[in-house]
Amino acid sequence: MQRALSTKVCLSLIALVSALAAQTPFESRLLDVLERHGVLSPAELADLRVEAARGTDAANLEARIGALVASMQDAPGVNISHKGRFQFGTSDGKYSMKVGGMIQARGTGAFNEDAADTIGFAAARVRITLEGQVFSPAWKYRVQPELAGPVVTTSGGTSTAAFASLTDAWLEWTGSPAFGLRMGQWEVWYSRHQLIGSGQQGFVDRWSQVKNFAPAYQTGLMAFGGIGGEKNDLVNWSANVLNGKGANTANPDDTLMGLARVAVSPFGAVPKYDSDLKHGDLRVETGLNAWTMGHPTAAGGFECVGADLTAMWHGFAFTSEWHSRSNPTGTPRQHGGFAQLMWNALPGEMDIGLRHGRFANEDALSGAAEVVETTAVLCWYVSGPELKLQFDAGKITTTSIAGVDADQWLVRLQAQVVF
Image 1 (tube, rainbow, N blue to C red):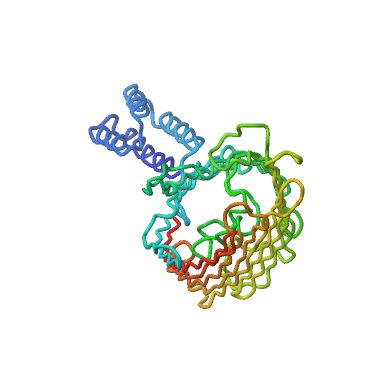
Image 2 (cartoon, rainbow, N blue to C red):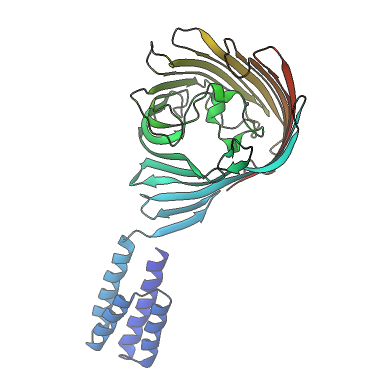
């Protein structure tokens, strides 16, 4: 729009000059300047020169200028802004793209009772995010590659960084707040802990044993929606059909994963953060989760159910979860959960938190029989949740199948920027 208005003003000036003194050297230089600065395209410049050479009178030239300006105003322009992220969009509102990312730089010290200690640094997560809408606000997309890549230890003991991988890549259609569809790959909506992005975590990382229950990144199809309340946030639900094989992995057979979540928030939606940074009134969310994988009577099939409770009130945030994973016969194999409390001691600036979790493997044939973890955290928000420093320290006690305990003290310092 700004370009169109500038063009109209400049061309009106040209028309005035033409009316007063046919094709003067001054007008010719002015046309050259407008072309050089991108106000006029070469085709527009040639068109105006031809009309001036024909001796077009001022009235007809003004009409021609008006038509040219109108055509520029009808064509959608591109708007660029920065509101938390770099944003690009067409002036007609149909297309948009936000460009962002996240860097988590971490230092870790693991001090083991019965093994060698390790101290080192890593780029835990390095991600670029592209998200926005296409055609209309109903169609949304998100693409996010993980550039850091996991660390892989070879049989010879050498650690190397793996290739970058894809985390999010999905297209979503939302017909109404009550119903939408998503297809692609994303971090599935299983449990409150999994729903909170890694950049919004109060601790350096999630509870270490959540990986035994939450399916993490999967590829498939999801239906979702929210109903009730003034903002359709009283009840939120999702139902998924997934490959169940993890991120960036094709399904080699006909076995699929079914997953569902229902959450109720009687006082309105609870912010997707570990901390109550806004010190608001009481917010409560209770969620039920379940997934099943494999044929009901086939070896290798599993089922998992879980429940979570979150409450926030005037700077305090409490979250608790419990999960149980069973084999096809219904016999419990693994169960566990955690409880954590965050206190935003300095409003918007500093959090203090404590988390305790327990994992049990009742009929373990391999791995740990029990893992008990207690961790404390201090989180300083340098500039809101996007730029922060986190320091946590805790003790992890692992009990082997033979009943032998091994203690590890884990100390971590993380700097995070989300842009």
